[in-house]
Image 1 (cartoon, rainbow, N blue to C red):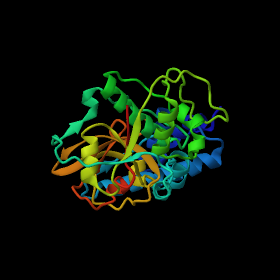
Image 2: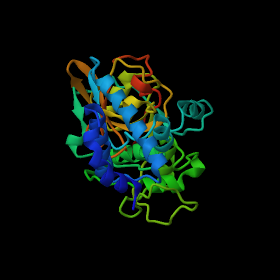
Image 3: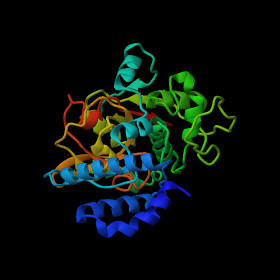
Image 4: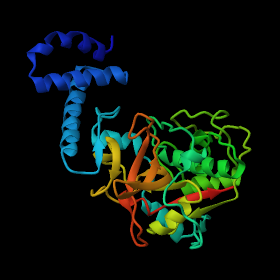
Length: 336
């Protein structure tokens, strides 16, 4: 019998012995175990996880007592320390790798060309246009970069062909290593785009996601083609706005913080979340909430994280900013 089930059966008998605060924490931890089917190897691990749960619960409480425009909440990852969460789910290579690719001409993506004549709407949600697939879950694999890349591919393909298909992340994990990507250990979205342009892509149905990499690239029919990719001007949110007004755009952010781990709702602003990008995500729109301009961002941690799998990040109109959590440092998109 799993240690979680043993303790679950025995510990409820002494709930009345606890203080009100401790009783709440114990019951919350048990609910967490049941809701997400958690189990732990031994009593030491169980107690360690409960301690982490308590600490994270207190962090969430303290944050939500502040007057900030976004809230945190318990989720599947509340029994993970910040280091455990980072080691498991953060997998996009650092922005320095992105800069090096550009500096030495390793990227074949085109430079962004600004178009001031574009008719840019005041708000936009590409989900309403039927070009964004359901929120996916990368699982225990640092493959966020592949989900960000396929999200941009899915959007571009749907806009061009009026047909939304799920494109295979597993193909990128297994087949784009020669482009510098490292499977579950990280990668770059522009490198994924370059691979897709050279070899075409297949669907999720033909090559399902496994949350692990393989040595060999599988042989599947690759019939989804792309023509070029574009890197948005670095540190320029006005150019990024132009790009997003035309299609979903891949970006990298720094997400190895507790505020991202437990984000629930609202617009992330008025905080220092860093700009050392380590996580690939997808901008699928923008708007205004309670007077704050925001980017609507699709994540790959499943629909139980955040706001149904999405997060809102503060948006500026600056042409000289790394953006909230570094979002303007390495944006790119692909074209059919």
